[in-house]
Image (tube, rainbow, N blue to C red; front, side, top):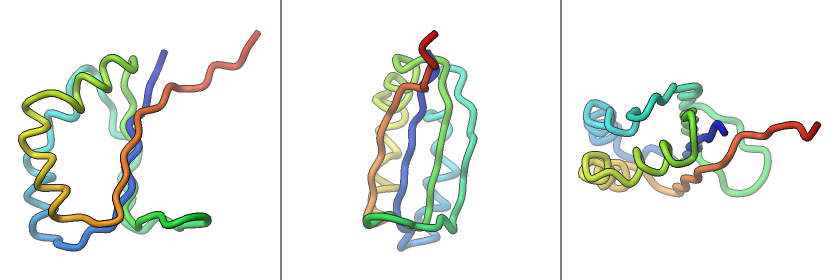
Length: 98
């Protein structure tokens, strides 16, 4: 089943964030596709940030493996330092019951 990594945050240090972006390719492992990279998200409820990223993976296992990989975790701290008000979730895609 398709799964998605959805991240939302405010970028507070653009230079550090660009450095993260240059090094963040390990998150794209396992057949990932970048679907959304929106620096101007419109928050309608809650305390969402301005930047939203949605990455599609063929399976939840692929998403979790990419996120938890040593290669990605080695650069995730750069994003944490460059952003505030952040959250990231991995969710399964919806399949309409038949």
